[in-house]
Image (cartoon, rainbow, N blue to C red; front, side, top):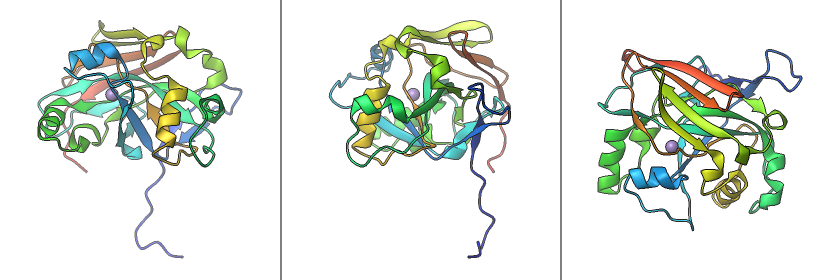
Length: 239
Ligand code: MN
């Protein structure tokens, strides 16, 4: 077999702790994202909350940013931050609909990330009933922290997310405020997709989303356990 073009390299995220070698990485297969998983954020977006069916969308795996440097994306005047828990799957799901009791065994670990959003493009798409891809699935749209093995994170419901931009607190919430917890979301995803080791799930954002400008520095945290530090860099030509 001969590739006719060079194969793209698999995006990888550093892994911290767990007694693993210090150069351990998590290779990313797919990125699933949950919309409207916190009632306060759904309200601030003017959206209704459907407790019967979560909203899903995807980002390309190579949208991840692991060095914290996010060039201001093209095509928008309104780049928004959404701080989110990131779930990293370490095993393939069994065939069929996942039993929520089996969900924890699929999880390798957790990180913290930003679901960066070109809010103006997303709003225009929503208004026309069109897909959200240009608003959500762009280059550098998923800065993410290192991944920490699940056993070092412990029970999620006791933990909280926060985001500071230029030292001002923008978003903060307990993870117990999620409408759908991780097991719920993995079950719902399993009805639609074959979940595999390497998949990431961005679990949705609480209230307080807002604009980022070139030069802004951000610090996203899961308590004092996981921290993502980064900066919005000046625009860069695509490619
Ligand atoms: Mn989001």
